[in-house]
Image (cartoon, rainbow, N blue to C red; front, side, top):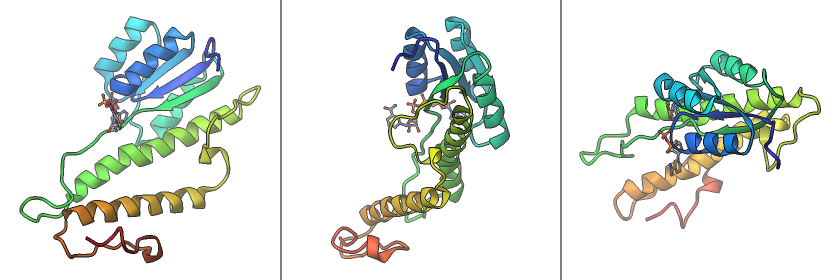
Length: 191
Ligand SMILES: NC(=O)c1ccc[n+]([C@@H]2O[C@H](COP(=O)([O-])OP(=O)(O)OC[C@H]3O[C@@H](n4cnc5c(N)ncnc54)[C@H](O)[C@@H]3O)[C@@H](O)[C@H]2O)c1
């Protein structure tokens, strides 16, 4: 697509994948808005490139709504890239047998999953009301009204990974299963 003059928003745009995306889109002529909760890096990048920066925690729906609205002020929003994310070094089961830490689970999933959903749905909402309506490329479930499918499919996919990760931490001969046995039967659950 021709990005020249198109409105673009990049979450997590202050660093890493997001920053590289901001630079590429800016170089291609897009009107880029960087959203990130790292003010120092976000403002420095915005100043260097002459683009807009909005401080935003992607896990906060109100902040996301405001940031997405701000991104559509200077040009119709056409491009949305969501890179805000994080990780954790906490193991599924610690070396001493300690179960995974609940607070880390919540923190990472809130940013990576909830944050991505909030950004995507707010961006899609603004895009769907722009003139002419923006076209979404690829499979973007939030463009279509299918919230039940969105959540159940995500839960199923995550459940499969959870079983797989737990299995790798278990002793040989044990079986790890999830909440959907029909989806998680042998041989891949047993070890
Ligand atoms: N770099 C890679 O090769 C790679 C490969 C696969 C997956 N990933 C995943 O992609 C994501 C981004 O990777 P990266 O290397 O660009 O990381 P990064 O740490 O360089 O950049 C992430 C950006 O997201 C921002 N951020 C984090 N939480 C936020 C929040 N709640 N609200 C707003 N902004 C927030 C950070 O401030 C940071 O600027 C991570 O989840 C990472 O695990 C990265």
